[in-house]
Length: 463
Image (cartoon, rainbow, N blue to C red; front, side, top):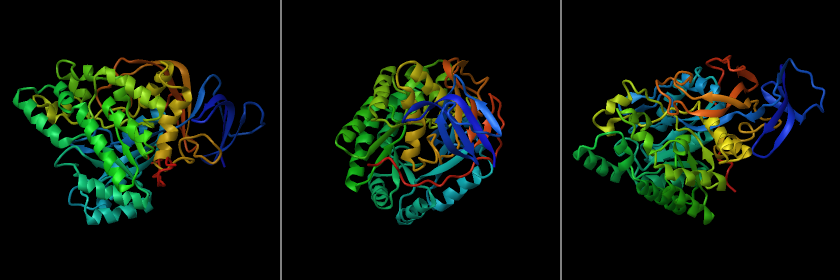
């Protein structure tokens, strides 16, 4: 039995802030007590004086090794989870992909194989439904029993991931019965494809046109539509990567009606904008993702949505493609730029900067980055908090440290940073994953294979 004692820090959870000592035994939180009130002995003592002691981050939206646009996301499960640990995230939920014509099982098994023995931190899976039919609908029940309790569908990407309204409705009806949570990429892909072709015909080929054709109104329209389909099915729905204030307004309206509608946004929508997409010399391609970056004036609405809990979660949608050789596939045709940004290492720090800037409170930081994603996806109690019985996924965070984000210093396997040169206050110092130190005072001490697959329950966020 190994015992670790973390002393003298300010323990911050979604529920409270308390100066406390934290005792860890056999990979779990064994006990907590006000600083100095217990005489505990331990094999290892970590002094967290003047630091925060926070739960490890839960990033509920990543795409490691995702095949997209004729190439693959540049982070493997090994490199991506190591980078996540560096950024204070100790659990990811990645997306296994069903290919059209294939079973859910075949897609899931392929992702198990990609991740097995490779991960530095714990991981779970959502399932992307690309082919809704009698067989895949039946398989949904089996996956929920296996701990894959959420399913993503798309109103975007016709010919790749797209599902029509009937398919979406049938998946939602199934989820209403088996307790699964339907996640929706909500953009009107059929209409967007028309606008893409029209833009290219006019010679509008630069990255900035990616943002112009994927209109905020088409995000709002699809968001409204999937909410109504979920209402018909009697199912909850979780809208991923909300970027536009018009789409957020649809979510807020539904929630005001008491509907089980949930929303996620990502750091890129809170900190970046169409100004980045318009950067010259094809640099804008680095910022091509879907939903796209919006004009800066959308950011205030998203921050407000996070404060009012109309948005419950901040995930990264980490899906990195290198500028050289990958983003460049779209030179001369923005529609061929692989969609995705790197961010799994940056999320906790950027959200701490939001605390410094006054957008959110410290407890809300932990809520949207740790507790709510854990609750939303059936992990809470084990992940997302510091409490007796929880996994000892703990971050010692220095709120006073200054850092400059840069591709020169990050650990993601990608040749640029979406936040190059951004100065932030706050930095991860030490990270424990199930009680094992994986980052030790800014040194990586973890290993591929430490991370284990986590079966998830159904959503704990309802009610």
